[in-house]
Length: 165
Image 1 (spheres, rainbow, N blue to C red):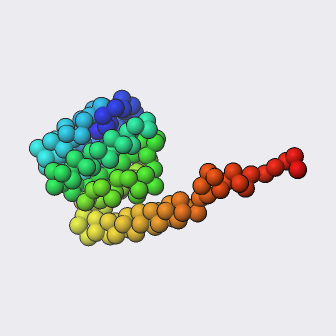
Image 2 (image 1 turned 90 degrees about the vertical axis):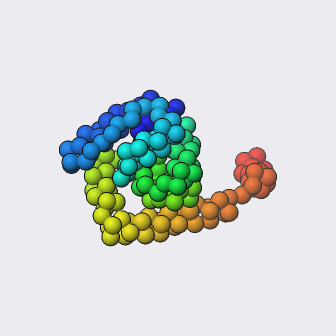
């Protein structure tokens, strides 16, 4: 589904074709799909995996909203996230910590079938989850370390280069 607030669907459509060509049954919910509808369909259809797409920046916050609603519904269905504004860092910082299930950032459509196969195999899913947890923790630690080493605006102004002295 392309999340609420976003109407771009080229990437979602490509993923749908790739997954269908690999014998996955894809239910395309369309664009501008509210979190509540995604959760309801996931429950009604007993979804094995949910794919979320977003091309514009507001989509990032809506993805957080989707996983929040899924958590409230006690779901832990694996989620694959992709789109131009998405990143592994955003998933590590904002999405994965909110959700109890696995959240995988997809760099491009070519990865989806392989990742889906891993998510649907119990042993591979455990290994992937451990890999993701480790990677996301590392990304969070690195990000937090960078934030701590940043100067305040006041400190930065004190250190400015003066070309006229």
